[in-house]
Image (tube, rainbow, N blue to C red):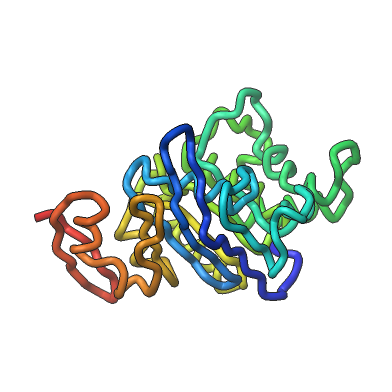
Length: 260
């Protein structure tokens, strides 16, 4: 549920970040704009989560800059950023048994403020999202007692409740069964068609090929390729990323990569 139809772009340029003696990112550049789905692929430990956290402003780059709508993220307050960018982490169990509805309502905090009660508009927003995500029957259930796929949809509902135009998602398919994966892919397509920009990391080349406007490959701390799925994601690229030989098989307009 986005608050504005104005185009918006989030972009990091020449980002560097080190942990101790290890250079995690070495001049990585990546962006996403309204209406796009951009998938970020890289091996474990390649720095995907670090790059997403820099783009969100959770970490400060040691070099380079992140810009949101043309403004440096350094000059924006957390509340301003949260009204434009929402983060969807991998599904997790909350330490307290919040109701599903309460978790989604947390997304309204950048608009409500920490010490104010939700208004009718906030209640209506959450009701709409619960219905759209198929979570209305679970609204009163503890978040800790629903399935992994339902938790992931709840976290997506919380992000959408922020009214943000950009969604940043860290491996959103992780732990989901096939049915929930396909439903989430369909929902992300719908959001992009409505003007939402989506940047997600993934370990599923097939999903990335099906759903993405662009695919970016993170290797040795840099974005080594960024472009249309058919141009970027090839058996050679998968071998470069993961050290696995595959063959591309296409049917009904979709491409899958099968191991040799």
